[in-house]
Structure formats: structure tokens, C-alpha cells
Amino acid sequence: MKSPLTNDIKYFDYNATHPPFAEILESCLASYLKEFYNPSGITRYSLKNQGKIELTRKYLVTLTNGNEKQFVFSATGTESNYLLVQSLRVLFPQLDSVIVSPFEHSSMYAALESYGFSADLIETDKSGIVHIQNLEQKLKENPRPVICLYAGNETGVIQPAEEISKLTKHYGQLFYSDLMQGFCKVDLSFSLFDGYTFSGHKIGAGMGAAVTYLPNINPNFRVFGGGNQENDHRAGTENTFAIECLNKVSKFQLEHLEEKNKKLLSFQSMIETSLEEMGCIIIAKNSKRLPNTTFLILPIQAVDFFLLGMEEKGILVSTGSSCKSRAREASKSLLHMGYTEEEALRCIRISTGYFTTKEEVEQLLLRAKELIQKFQSIEEI
Image 1 (cartoon, rainbow, N blue to C red):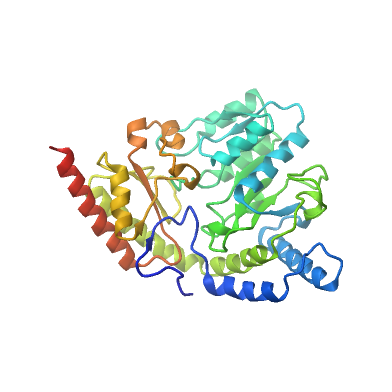
Image 2 (cartoon, rainbow, N blue to C red; image 1 turned 90 degrees about the horizontal axis):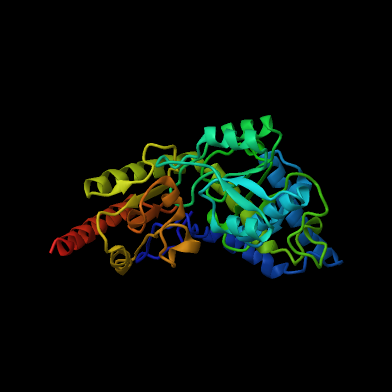
């Protein structure tokens, strides 16, 4: 599959958004341009488009062994997280708090606040893994639903979902998970989760389609009213183009998952070995992580100038979660892990993906070495 990236861009921000699989999206776009009809309409042309949406829903059932009526399509990951949390408010109208990991995307915390929940955070440390003993203590003292993402947006650390699932089942509680960084990146056991979310743009399907899997069939689960789309769970015309892209790209990604991850693991080893030699500290290096993600502390203070220097050569990296990276705030995830604010502000994230090449990794490391040496010599003065 041909990369959509131009030769002057070396892209290392796959966790923010995966470059689109142009050939697949162009195929879906050609179909959409011919069959643009509103899927909620009454004509046979509209019904055909509704059929495409239902085929994707059935595909997700086959993939996850879930219930067809519990899958809801929306537009963004944030929206899908809001619907997931809204379902908790419907199920537990008197509940005031939920047990939550300290690593969630900001939209999850915002959704909890919007629906009147406080977040009782699970303890962690520099491993980036939630403390299972602390979670069990919280469940024992006050049994409540648990929300814990599968893999960290910044660190790439994979949480012990199987252990969390066993605990929540033991205490009769729901376990929800944000699978945005796990879906189509690693093998997932969907049966571990009572509810979850994922998004098309994280896998190269373009923007415009995300998925919420609800814990059961309940007509009161609803993120928007005003229409009966998505089985009354989400009013608004569905994005048939984006939903079809999600379907086809996820199939492609999963078909090539093993060979892709073998390549990305080799890149991760190259990147981390070289950066440690330059004085960088790899966050949660010894924890189980996504094969495409490296989160590190630079040995210099001039992080903004480092990023500009990388971009000057067409090399794009980030400082962490894309919804926070422009703010240049210290990562709350790192602060909860026990790092100082000063250390957290020196962090950058490098994330690779399907289109990443060895040549690009070599150019990344060469430029990083030039800039680190340059700024170290300046800061020593």
C-alpha cells in the first residue's frame, strides 16, 4: 500500500493520527460520490447506504463477538467516550464517583465531569501500570464501575486488562476501556470489556467515524437527541463514507498486523538504543508497551526549539497527547507516575506506523543527535 506522505515529510506522530490509506479511501470516496444518498431516507438508494452501515456493524460483531445492537457509530473519539460515560449515568443515576486510571484521554475526564462523576484515580508508579492491589482495595471498600484505557496515548504502556476484568467481574462491576491506541495495533480480547471505544483516524481510515460499544441494549443510552439514527443512541446523519473506510482499513490493518509489528519493534529498539546513548530517558522502558511508541525525556531544556529544529527538516514528532500538546502543559500521566514537572516538560513522543521506513528512522536519529548536541553545548555556556 502506497504512502500518502510526501518525500519531504518524515512522520512520527502516528498516535495522534495515522496517515490515511489513500487507495482504500479513494475507493470509498468513488463509491460515495456515486451513492451520496442520506442513509436515513426512504428511497432504495438511501436504504442501500443504510445497508452499508449495517454491514460494518455486522463486521464488528464478527470481529469482537459483541452484540450488533450495542455498536454505535459517531464522529469522533471524544464523542464516543461521552456516550460511553453517559451510559453509566443512565445505569447508575445516584452514583457519584467512578474508579478511573490516571492515564485517560482528557475527553474521558471531561465526560465524567459533565455527567456528574468524580474520578477516583488508581495509584501508579514509574512503570506506567495501574496498581492492581490499589484497584482491588477501592473495589472492596466501595464497589463501582472501572474505566481504564488499554494502552497509554503517551507512554504506550499496555494495562493489565485481564486482571482488571477478573476483579471487576468478582465485584460485580462494569469495566469500560478506551481502545483508541490498541485497536488494530495489537491483538485485543474484546470480551474483557463491558464497554469500549475506538476511532477510525487512529488506524488510517481518515477522520469522521468512531465506535462506542455499549454494555447492554438500553433505549436511554443517548449522546444526542432529535433523530432515530443509530438505534436512537446518536441523532444525526451517519457518515457512510467514513464508516465504510473504517471497515475496510481495519480489515487491512489486521491482515498485516503481525508483519507490521515485527517491523515496528525493530524500529523501537533502534530508536531507544540510540536515544539512550544520547542521554535520553525512556519512560516505562521495561513495561509491556505498544511496539510503535516511545515516550522519552530529552537531556536538554530547549524542547520547543528541538521540535522546531526537527520540523525544519520535515521530521514530525510530538510532546504527547494531541489534544494537549499545543498547550505545553506537563503531562498529568507523568506527574501521576512520579516524574517532576520539569522532567515532564522535557518529554517528547515518537510513534511509528504502517508507512514508517528504516530510512526515516535513521534520519530521525541523525537529526535528533545533531540538535541534542547543539543545545547541550549552548546550555553548558
